[in-house]
Each structure stands twice: as C-alpha cells, then as structure tokens.
Length: 286
Image 1 (cartoon, one colour):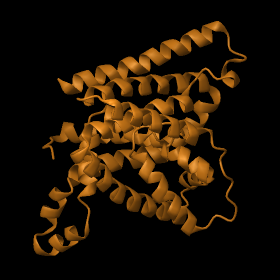
Image 2 (image 1 turned 180 degrees about the horizontal axis):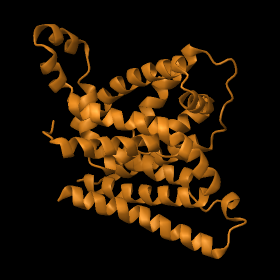
Image 3 (image 1 turned 90 degrees about the vertical axis):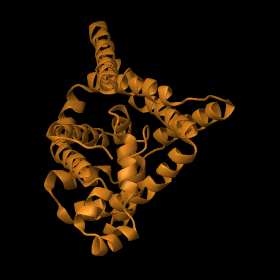
C-alpha cells in the first residue's frame, strides 16, 4: 500500500476515469489500462483484502484499521473516477464511435501495442511454457471475439446479477473486455441504456454482481502473481495479443469509403496512442 498526497489521489482518480472509459468499450479492458498506468497489482491486492475477517476486525479494531487494510483512499479515488466516466462517457463514446470509428479504434490499437511492451518487460524468465500460455490465451481471446452475440429475451434481474459476476471477472484481466462479455451475453445495450436513463434497479443489481465477481476473482489473480508471476504475465500477454483482433481499425467496413489520407491519418493516430502511453509509463517509472 502506497502513501499518497492529494496530487497522488488525483492521479488515481484520473486512472479510474481512463479505466471506466475502457470498460465501457467492447474490445478494451480496464485491466489493460490499470496495468499500463502501474496500479494493477495494487488494485488486485487491495480488492483481495475484502473477506469475512475484515468485518470481524471492524468490530474489534475499528473503521480506521479496516479502511487502511483495504487501501480505502486508493479504492475510493479509483472507483469514483470509474463511476464518473461510465456515467458520462458512454454518451460521448456512442457519438464518437459512430462518426469516427476508424480513428477511435486506431487510437485504441496504439494503446494495446504499448501494453505488449509493458507486459513483456515484466516477464523475467522465458521458457516453452511461457510461449504455450501466450498462444493458448491469445487463441481463446480471438475465439471469444468472433462468437456471435447471444440475444437474451425476458432478461430478469437474476440474469443481470450473473452477467455482472462474469463480466467483472473479465474487466480486471488485461486483454479481455468486460463489455465484450456483456455483448456476448446479450445485455450490453441493456446496461448502457440503464446507465443513460439512470435505471437504478438494473444498475444496483449489476454493480452487486460486479462486486461479487471482482472480490473473488482478485484473490485468484493475487495468488497467481505470488506463486507464478512470470506465467501470469504470459497469460496476460496472450490475452492482450488476442484483443488486437477485436480493435483492429483497418477493417473492410471502415476503409471501403476512406481515402488514402484518412488511412494514413489513422496510422498516425495509432502511433500517437502508442507514444502517449509508452512515454507515460516511462515517466511513471522515473
């Protein structure tokens, strides 16, 4: 757990905004953004501290102890940014992605390419197992991306709860988009509309599902980091490589009516996206 001043918490809040934007977009993972910004392991460690003993300590040791135990200031700053961007950005994104799909996906491709460099540097020892894991999870991510979305009829609140649990597990994994999972489960439009229209019953049930999924799945990731760090990063590298298929900007549907100048500009935007994140990660290390 890091000690932060006001500027530090504002930075975490801004990280939360970026994560919320990513989680609202099918094809981009909030976990990818957290990894890029250097807060991924702290996020997983903080969330995994939620357990039954925490509530016992609340009675015996007080609120302050429990708040520090879960890194409360960090989580509060981050979650505030995530929620703010989810509520506000979905409307902006729906307009941008309709008007400028080539440029938006080009920028996201740049972000993902930068992520590959960040993850690769975290793998200290390479062997055949690393490459096998990368191949398997890249293949699974591509397979997941090409599955035809299911259309769920008569969606009830229990189904929304289950979708929240499943999607939240993907949201904190770099490379797998929680929004893409919601598309496949047939509830993405429903959740987006609920956020737009502030349908509190759907939002609350979905958030409860997300909370259940994130708390439990974070414990698994924390255990993997502790015991198999290099293999865990190899899995994440495979997931991110596979996600390139989803965000690839130069699809036929985007480029049919585009001039060479538009395509060239999209390449420049990809480079900008890569440079911004890569430079930011270098500065963060210093």
